[in-house]
Length: 401
Image (cartoon, rainbow, N blue to C red; front, side, top):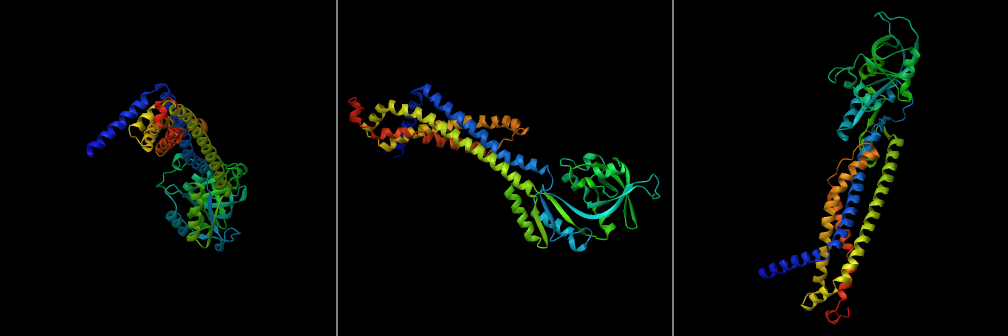
C-alpha cells in the first residue's frame, strides 16, 4: 500500500513537470500576470497598513486629541471647577499606552511684566493675562510637536523646570519680551521672577498666555494638587482613541472626557477614504489578473483534451484529473505570489516616499496575504478547465473532440 502511494506521488509530480514544460511561452505569460498582480497587491496592501500608522503619527503632530475637564467648568481659579491632578494622571497611566503624553493645566488670571535688571521689583508696563501652570516638558510636546525640553538646551529631564516659563507670542510682542528674558508674574501680593525659555506661537489662545511650572502655579493660587484640565495626546487609530476615551470616562465619573473631534473625525475620514481607495484598487488588480490567467487557461483546456482523454481511458477519475490541473494553477499562483509579493513590498517603499514623503515601512503580514490572494486568484482562474470533465475518451480517440 505504501509503495502504491509512493508510485502515485511520483507519477503526480512527473505529470506536473510535463504540464509546466508543455508550453514555456504560455507559462511565462501566466507567471508574469500573476507576479505583476501580486506585486501591485503587496505594494498597495503595505501602503494601506502603513498609512494607518503614518496618519496616526501625522495627526499627533497637531497636539492633544483628548481633554479631561471638570463637569460644568465655567470659571478660572475656582476649586469647584478643578480636578485632582494626581488621580487623573494615575488613571491615564493605567489606561493609556507607553506613547501617551498628558499635560495638566491650572489656569488663573495674573499680571505679567518684563523683569527688572535688579532683584528689586520695579513698576513697569503690566498686562493681565491667563497664566497656565503645567508640566512644561509635556506641554512642550503638545504645543510644539517634535520638540522636547532637552532639545532646547534649557534643562535636562532630571532638573526641575521651576523658575522657567513660556510666553505667548502676542503677549511677548506687547511687552517686548524676548527669548531668555526675565519676566515677573504678579498674583496678588506675590511676585514670581521667571526666565522665559522662548516665545511660542500656535495660532490659538496660547499666544496670549504665559506657561509656568505647575507646582509654582498651585502655590501661587493656593490650589495644591489641583488642575483645571488635562490635555492628552493618545497615539492610535480613531477606534482605539474612542475606546481609550470610554475607559477613561468610566474611571473618572466626576470628569468630562471629550475628544477634540476635528482631529479624531478628520483622521478617521482621511484613513477610511485612503483605505477604501487602496482596497478597491487591489480588488480591481486581482480581477484583471484573474482574467488574464483565465484566458491562458482556456487555451490550456483546448490543448489538453487528448491528455485528459488518455488519462480517463487508463482509469483516471475526473476528480483526480482536475486535481492535477488545479495543482498546476496553485503552484503557478505560489511561484508568482512569492516573486511578485517580495517585489511589491520593495515597490511600496518608493511609493510611500512619494505619497507621504517618508519611505513606507515593510510589513511582514502583507507578504503571506499577497501570496495567498495570488494562489486563490490562480485557482479561481482555472475555471475553464471544468470543460475537461465532459471529455469522452472515445470521442478523443476518434478525433471528434
